[in-house]
Image 1: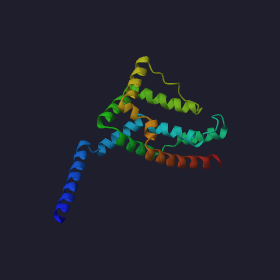
Image 2: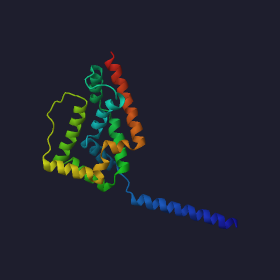
Image 3: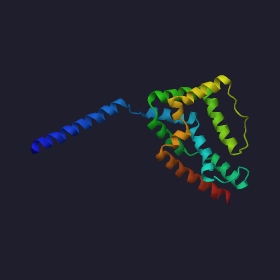
Image 4: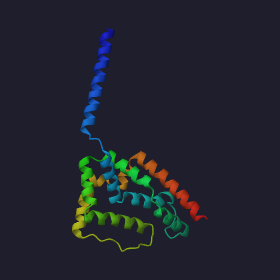
Length: 192
């Protein structure tokens, strides 16, 4: 009876190990070069800029965009470039997107339309915070708007949004932690 139990336990262990190995074969490992491409995609989509520009509305939800203290703090926050955001966002993108979706994202955001769309998103985020814009609002032609809309409706496009990435709880918590560090540094700077 003891032998049957041991054989059964071993058979289950072998089956589980085989299933895990089969799953790992289905999902290709992301190589270092691919990780660099994912970081390039995060930068091309301007996700790090959009996250940084979203920090003031999270940490100062009741401030008016015309409040001088709020404007000083948001200008300081927007000037920050924390490489931790790119790393964090790249990790979240890697976890949620298939290789085909990553390729689709690269193709879109490295096209003229994708670059213009990303610039427009950053411009709009800055405008919502009442930043003085150094450039005029980027304009998309009707064809470019349709191309962007189709991409955003695709699996890749829907996953390359800050809303989707914030839905990943670990990512959201870490973004808030990095954001809190930036807010604290900017608050100390503006109070001097």
